Length: 286
Image (cartoon, rainbow, N blue to C red; front, side, top):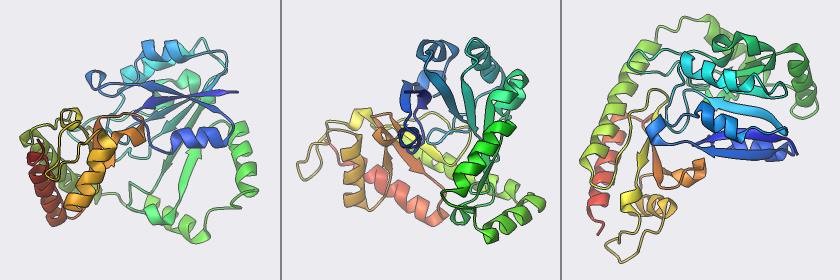
């Protein structure tokens, strides 16, 4: 079947979406040393005559990694020799960036590949409208037409109320984002501080989105106060939920075992309590 290259860590739904369309997910593990980003060498090694799509998520979930314009151009250079490959740029976290990190979407970085690029975005993150279930896409006319046919025969159309709300949101000033980002940055620093102070955890600094992807490999194999051995990241996440009532997601769900995703898009007091509970729980492991 046709193959879709998905860099890991990835948003949990990507492989299933590909499988649902009778495609073959090709997972390419990225690493902390390269900022959780796909390198040109990795892309070149993964491409085959059967490759049809490359999915890029920037800023990324769960890592918060952001591809620079130079990095996107380097990937585009590799794709030049594979004219059958399309690129899906998932830019849903575009506005949520820290430290003045610039944003470039793939079509901007590689205008020569605009005819092969589908750019996906929405109002879920930019306007906290997740419940309205509305996104949008821009791409070549033939592809958008095909998407419209598929949608018309499956979900018919997005809710008219959601469409009106999204138009109002996009036409309204986004000056509230500065306040949001200031608050999110404080929470980001709080989670990073907890991780740095907790033996057994470590993490790079996310450039965007609202979660930290923490390395928990040094906690794997440790024993809880009740004598249970934590055999993997899933076991650790389950134990934290049961022992502390704090919900984190295990990295295996994102295609990267040995990590935990800690989201900080929660109220300040709740986040402080969660950080304290995680730190105290990890200190009890032997």
